[in-house]
Image (tube, rainbow, N blue to C red; front, side):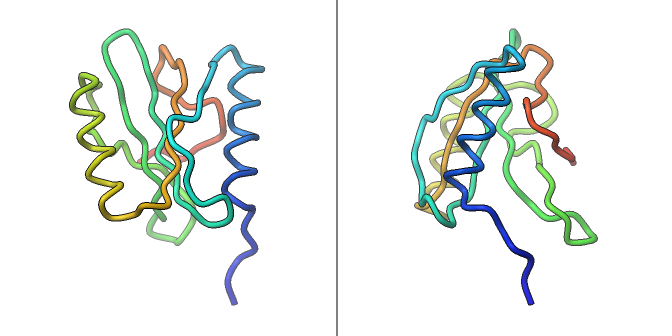
Length: 111
């Protein structure tokens, strides 16, 4: 039996509201499947961008991976990573937040 899941479109709306209340303003860059798409989160800081992608940790719990690496990258590198992921999953949502500390406005285990 699988765990109950919230629709991704609702999760995105909630994440954007959390960002707004935390001063980490966000925007939807690309809408994916409202019911079951995946999410890429772009964090924009002073040194560049970091893209988080959804994964499961070793125990099967939701987590986030810094898909573009530990060090922030330039916009072209982030765009290339996003484009590559969209080739694998056309249902992806892409949201972006202002995040000077490169942390999302929602609770997240980052691996």
